[in-house]
Image (cartoon, rainbow, N blue to C red; front, side, top):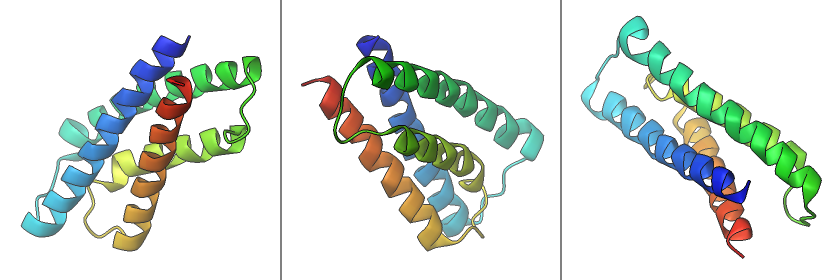
Length: 118
């Protein structure tokens, strides 16, 4: 179980870095991405991993006791990931909102890895 969570969490961290790359590229270079060719397939790929992660995390939390990790955080992080997977392609997205969500995801996923590896 822990190995699966580590694998999924690390994958989501990679996606989170990609979200930032796409967002910055769109803002700086004005890159526009085709919805059906790029955005939708990417968002679906992220959603698949995100859903797996959410299920695994819910199971893991129900089987173990953690003071600093809660179901609400998992749900919120999962929602942020879904939103970021699409918003990252739209440079008109509020920069502060995007950065805050991105940092929140980064922080929580990193905390999970620390907690599991204890």
